[in-house]
Length: 197
Length: 189
Image (tube, rainbow over the protein chains, first blue to last red):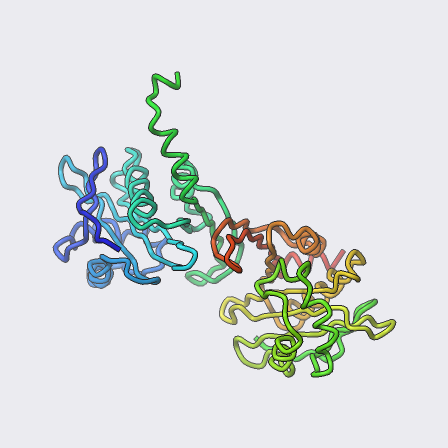
């Protein structure tokens, strides 16, 4: 696939590759207990976050199934790092990708996460031509679940005690959206408010 | 997880037993039918293909190692006719997860046989093997299979749309599940 033209700009944000020099910004949110409790990759201190960041710096291409593209999300006005979004190509024949995201709690309640996640889904459908994009979160991760519901992803699964996670039975939600559903949602978004009113 | 059942496993009307090579004709009788395979990952099979899967399933009748699967033939106890097959697959030993499956000849549909066999599998999984969660999957339009899962007291956990291509077409899939606590509550009733 042709490479992405980065950075990608949304209204207030810029999406770009991670650099090793981003360590301070990533440590600021990635190692927080309230963030870590929902993540598969355990990184509780600077050394462990550096290992995670090193991996993220390498995730720049979707050349084959299993590959991940991870992008840093920065605020345009002051270059503060808001968090990260990622797409993992899971299935070539059925053209499926998994969306992942992590955001710094410091910048909550301003719609940045929603803006960044929408941009990531746009990239998945428009640039990589995926057929379906799905995402998973813990059932107790209300913020992520609310975000996905709000942008029009459908709740497809609610697994109960399907696996042990951190020594406890896990409860997991799956959300998904198909390319044609996303296009329909985008059209609704394009209609100016005054026309709807 | 370990599970070495005493065969045959008997229910009111059925017996579940390991496959043997003589089962080819009976299995071919439903595995060759389009109305059976339209809901399966497998396409309609030739006699040779059926012989091959039976060859592979002979001996797959216990869990002695992680990842082992159990495939069983299901006979009518009254006339000893083989009417279908069931599976009990270890999906994760670490998380104590298993999946059940069932395929029956359309001629015996509507008698609750799949539900009866399914209950026997649940009992093996929860009461004998210490499974924590059993799940089953079917195509979203496979009404008969969906009803079996509901009769087994399973909850719908997922409805996936176009998540995979099966035989060149977009699939739509339901996942139902039952936890060990839920099974015990049911059994106590």
